[in-house]
Length: 122
Image 1 (cartoon, rainbow, N blue to C red):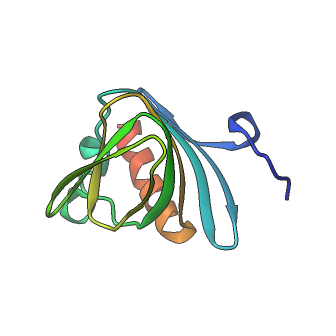
Image 2: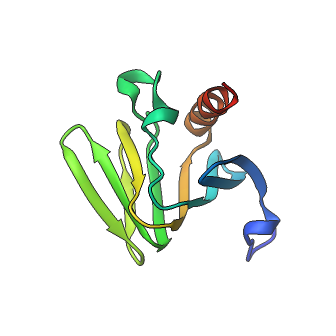
């Protein structure tokens, strides 16, 4: 495995209006670089999942921008320079254009991405 991987070194996982996800898997983990345009919300993408929310846990680091995470007990903003853990049962909102590194269990992320691709394809 190479180190120092950049955006162009990773396989596109999901590309669409306002969203770009690049991914590499190792050790049962999906390691992603994610770019979202300001204003993007995941509510439409996650509709149809249990409680219409992401059911995967994520650990990560906000490289740039501000992300708002909507959970059952409210919303919280994460800004550039912060690490995070987002438990299952959330939706996301890019308050500003954002880029972040995210690590998730591959099997859970596969289910999430398959659902998002179905929704995006109409």
